[in-house]
Image (cartoon, rainbow, N blue to C red):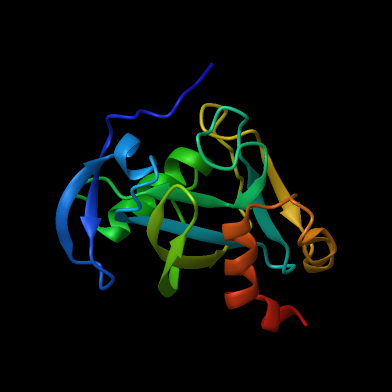
Length: 171
């Protein structure tokens, strides 16, 4: 059984993204809600379908739910762009993509507080989801996403981000 590395080191940031310290993954997810940065990439194909990953059952946050194509923590000492490229390569096997930054926001759950950097890309190449990090993935139509919203099928983070950045585009 896989498990997240509780000793992995993340930067602590302020709401503008300035690094003000560091924390372990375990501490970042234990309910103390220390703000740490993450990167997301929404992968659309040229047909307007959105690729989503399925989170494995062993994940410490939101297991077995469908989520943003790529989502990962920024390691201490890494830039946002370096983290995005690393996570996309690790999770989907993609290296030849052009990201577009849509913005960033603070996301808070019962266990953690993240500064989320939202990116998107259009990609029609081969996607190879990591069997170590994901439980597969597939493309969803905008209609299918709308139909499954609010039913516990997707992560709450994905749903709020999709509504904020993309729902207006697909209506």
